[in-house]
Image 1 (tube, rainbow, N blue to C red):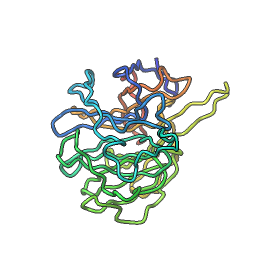
Image 2 (cartoon, one colour):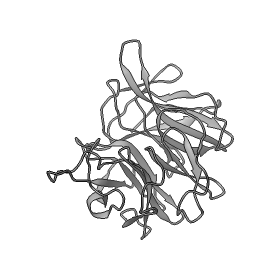
Image 3 (cartoon, rainbow, N blue to C red):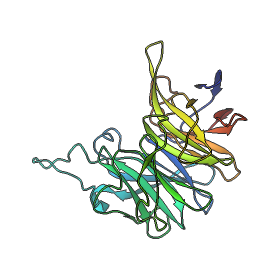
Image 4 (cartoon, rainbow, N blue to C red):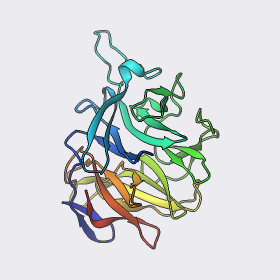
Length: 293
């Protein structure tokens, strides 16, 4: 059972969607009504070396099928080439972290970060989630830092979001940034993600919280604003142990948060999961009691 401290103790039954090591879980709803899931993979060396980006698919958020490796560092990389030491072994800086899948402008896009090597965006050349994918910037990272995401506003404008609340509007053709990046607000130190609900922008990020019992949790924090550039409200706790998550709306209009578990208070560690969330009258995101999946 997952105990979520929001406005008092709330409990949801939460179990992994499937038994495979995944961090930084992301779910995207495709135009075909299929749900696609990705995240950091490559256990147990994923902090230093992994193979690239894997995707799973589901029609009902219950049964998930592996689509396999859709982008390989070894075969598909440009500036992210696998580095090899003098003994012929892969170096400790050839891992993709926190990929997110987004469907925009008639095709799929994968945002990603190399471990402390910068961020980038991959575009599916076929309009299919399995790709093949090409990098929009082959000669180096799009930005520095880590943890990349995309947000599409109601007017069709697309924004690149990363690290701890850095935002920049994309060019209309998605070939690069159209403006100087702005830091719109520090809600957490990493895992920034923006979505819009009921006309209001919600910025979520991950933050470590130290507790009186000397434990530490990796939490989802949030703030909201009437403008994508802010100012954002005072931050608040959404999900204890739910850090580096994102929100998506299912085919029935229900909002969900992703989850993976990263601390001793989580019900499990490093497995993909989702739970229902809602927006309260105070414009705050909160978990739906009994809404785990």
